[in-house]
Image (tube, rainbow, N blue to C red):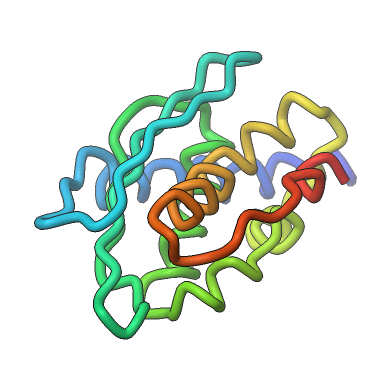
Length: 143
């Protein structure tokens, strides 16, 4: 029975990855305030993130270009839903564990954890480099 559950969970991840491909991939943000590219060299996933943050610190638009496995694309889709329309202070509090919980899968591999956290890591780095939030430890992704 556990195998059937795993198949259902992976189907959901594939559905989210498809939604990413249709709705987010190659969406270019008009007048982005943050642009950053990051990758996961362990598996070849690579994203370029674009965000538009307004003067009140609210994320107005999110865009990604690049390539990634189903887990990284699904995670980026979930993250975009979690951050769009929210203040950067709320965005910085999102954890990889939250995103993985939203995916509904169990990740036991360090490589897959990096896939699931690529979009979040890129977003955090972009917010730090743009001066919206203070730099924090990234060890949370290793948990």
